[in-house]
Image (cartoon, rainbow, N blue to C red; front, side, top):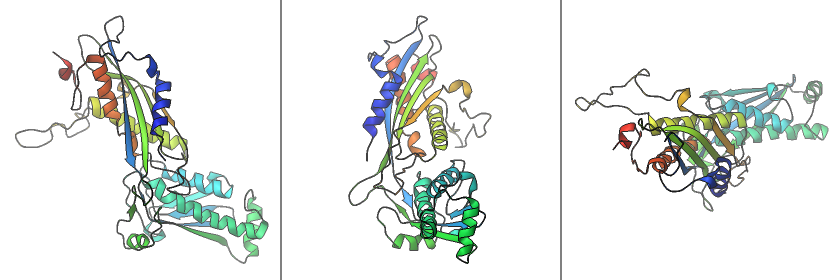
Amino acid sequence: MRKLKECLERGADRFGWSKRNARPGSMREDDGTLIGWGVAAGAYPYISAVAEATARLGVDGSLTVDVGGHEMGQGIRTAIAIVAAGELGVSAENVIVRIGDTSHGPQHTTAGSCGAATVLPPVQSAVRDIRAQLDKLTGSGKGLKPTDVARLIRATGKTELIGRGVNLGPKNDPSALTLADKGMLSFTGPEFPEFVAFAYIAHFAEVRIKPGTPTPRVTRWVSVIDCGRVISRRTATSQAYGGIVWGIEAALSEASEVDPRFGGFVNNNLADYAMAVNLDIPSLDVSFIDEPDHQINSLGAKGVGEVVSVGAIAAVANAVYHATGKRVRHYPIRADDLMS
């Protein structure tokens, strides 16, 4: 499912693109400050890996989920808790997430925006397995109080109910699980027998360049993302912010300066490496199409990590061209690139 057209249309509306004068150098403030508007689109392949999940519902009503995965600040723990809690109808506060432990199944490589798409489907399956067991006992496993759960589990002669789930990807290839159990790569996508799967994004950027000091500064930003179903809007938005900031940095300041004599990096520390500060980043307007793509997995969720940075630099470069009429084909774009 491709929603790039919708990304561009919604972004243009939110940004006010129809008010743009297309002639380079035509938009400026009364003091001579040049204004440039630029747009760019990005795509990033959908990738997932094999994963196994185990869910345990204890007599105290707590739900423990074990699955291969890694938390690097992207919010995958939150996404797992949201999916597990939603399937059983309990509070996310009652969900205990255990990841990154090799005793709980294969640990996939964290790369290519595959974290959520890899671990969430088996988590969903494992919790549905538990819900099915509760349904047999009560007719409905949702909305149970902790006292009800304890009574039902004890009635089975057990101390907990266990559910299991596995994600073999859209190809449903069992041999991938064998590879994963051996610690080998087991990625699938973005090409499948009947379709290809990507995440998409549209960026709209505004830059302003003051007369006499031709240093571009991003002053407004709109991005619209198609990443399938958004599981956790807060963490997805946070990832989007990080990718956009990285794109603005790369476009205007971020670079490793190499000593041509010896090949060493001159700015090899955070004191000398030109990273963006708060003044360099405007208020970021981020929104999501948020339509599930059930061709790829049961949740319809695609990745939202890397796709955010794709096209961000191009949007800034296009805005600089619109402001100045000068097409800079390298980055970072600096004042000396626009002087003459």
